[in-house]
Length: 250
Length: 180
Image: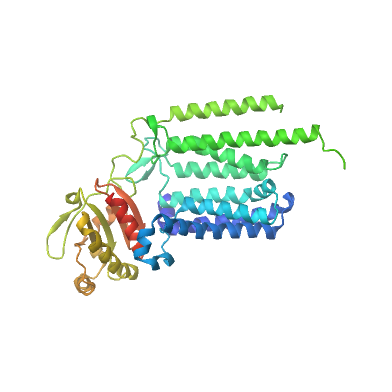
């Protein structure tokens, strides 16, 4: 079954899996937009500009980082090669463009992030499927009965673990009753996703190791988790303090 | 939930997280990619031994110490044909820096008689190898043509590009990476 799936969506076709996830995620975000007092148009625009920022930013940052190669063949700038791309740079560009658009349109930050959370959660599912199809984000060696044969060895099916956890995170986000403070949907998603990565990375076979064999991704996930809990606590404290000390009437 | 209770839970979660990082550390580095050859970045490149159209035998293991681009191609594949000139240009530019290209023709699914006329027409100077049984393609888990494997001097796959044609800048950035 996995073999058929992997051969159907072998690279570079594996990216196709990400597109329906994005589309579905955006549709679900639109469905909930009113709950957060964000218009569907605004939501669509922020996603559109964010994606544009991702594509242009990813390509431009790749060009900047490899400027000497492009000086010799400037036409490569317009190549349709997906590999001429810096995904981290693209992600940062998308965040900056999305944030810039939100600021310009005076969108409330936390409500907008809450409204976009189904899109983020669904994208995580799409990413897990793309990993499974491409055989990337693969597991370490195992003799467990559910190990999958990948890259010439029996390995932990980390992509399937990732898929299961991202579906569970999505389910939690979608079915939980939204409760204050504003931003809690997004912060729950971030905390759970960071926690899932912290847990799953232990079974990965492609971890980048730092001092003493510590897995870098786990350290980063822990930092994200700690910051998320800190911000969540700060938001609650702000809300409590406003409740206890309401602003004076004009 | 009371704020104090919640904060205690947060602290417990973070401490458990740190403990998990410690427990799952991999001091020997054995879980990371490993020494099993596989056609995936980070793994040693699977070895192969193939003949050129002239009958000379070339092994990938003989190339150890050089940066190698293994390009899988066929004459009937338009993107393969389209990227050959770019590969030739970049090969000529970097061949003096211990860089080589092995153009592995998928002979088992190609017209044998069309290979050399194509190579001559394109004036390709890098070694062309013939995979007559499909053994090499199977070892490299070929899914699409063209497929390009960028192998560093230690024999480890650094990058895999599936599909084409590759842009000249892409080739240069990848080659410079494996030459480092």
